[in-house]
Image 1 (cartoon, rainbow over the protein chains, first blue to last red):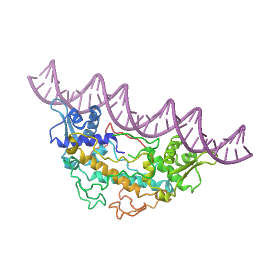
Image 2: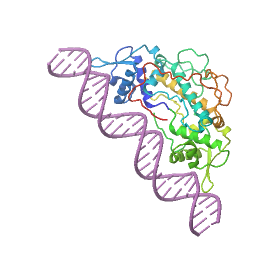
Image 3: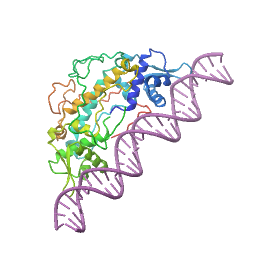
Amino acid sequence: MLSRTTEYALRAAVSLARSGGAPCTAAELAAATRLPAGYLAKVLQSLARAGIVRSQRGLGGGFVLARPAAEISALELVNAVDPIPRIRSCPLELPEHRSGLCQLHRKLDEAYAQIEASFRHTSLADLSQRGGGRRATPAWPPAAPSRSATKKVRKDGKGVRGAGAGRGKPASRKRT
Amino acid sequence: MLSRTTEYALRAAVSLARSGGAPCTAAELAAATRLPAGYLAKVLQSLARAGIVRSQRGLGGGFVLARPAAEISALELVNAVDPIPRIRSCPLELPEHRSGLCQLHRKLDEAYAQIEASFRHTSLADLSQRGGGRRATPAWPPAAPSRSATKKVRKDGKGVRGAGAGRGKPASRKRT
DNA sequence: TGATATTAGGATAATTTTATCCTTTTATCC
DNA sequence: GGATAAAAGGATAAAATTATCCTAATATCA
């Protein structure tokens, strides 16, 4: 669902956030995050263009965060690299439009909106916290809308999957 | 984010739900939904294998819903075709594991969990409602967790996009 | 039984996303 | 200035997703 590129951006940013201001080269970040170095470099370029990281060429150069991790939202990172595709109008612009698939697309957009909101309220600092403070707190409802992560953690760990679904040809996705 | 295949499955299911029990051929559904006929056929096969629709060959055959639309959740449809990829363990199984990227992956999984929950509580009947009952209700918080859609509708229509993001090479996605 | 409609399934092609490689630019150090 | 380090950018390759096409299986109808 979230693209690989998005994962890479987030992982790199976390790694960067943890290195305490010291510049990291693309190669270092790739090693630390176990991501393909070449591609990661492209992703870092995107982040640089978006003004989230600053890059410096030459000896001793590399990448640093352009702002404190607490002031960078996960949403910024994601959108810099592979934006959440909000749906503003039904893909099916036709007679059916008004009466048509609108509930469907409203729902889909709603899902995107949820993700946006969730990511908007999560900072890179939140994502970079060390030590997994595993909670038993129920994930729902989301309680009061304050800032910082490690607040909501889902309750179950089961793989609820509807009906007899499971196989299915055109579906496949094998990403890590 | 949601794959094209997922959209197709949902659109086809809505179309099917609206045809009131009469079998629809893949070609008919493709025409009604404006989707590529050949590929849609594959998607329908997946839905059939998942037990969501029933298929019948030969003259007068086609596809029908296996159950009333009210008893089919959006989640089932999505999972039949391109499952929501819940994250159960950090991709980076390494020394860094515990101390590492876990907050990140917890957050990502949380986002997936939200989508799952949202889709689980939306039925195909909800998605198939005609006439767009546009609400002004704020999208957040999600209020009480009862069933049925057309409940949450997002408040804004603005394209909030972090910082100066926008361009960016490795990112592209041009889907409809 | 034969003709026709329609799904099932496999092979293959087109497109998009990810990944690699190479050259160029810019910086540091000597 | 020359050597070296590192990002920038472009061309290309590999992999995954989406799409098309063809044949086979199965059903209906005459």
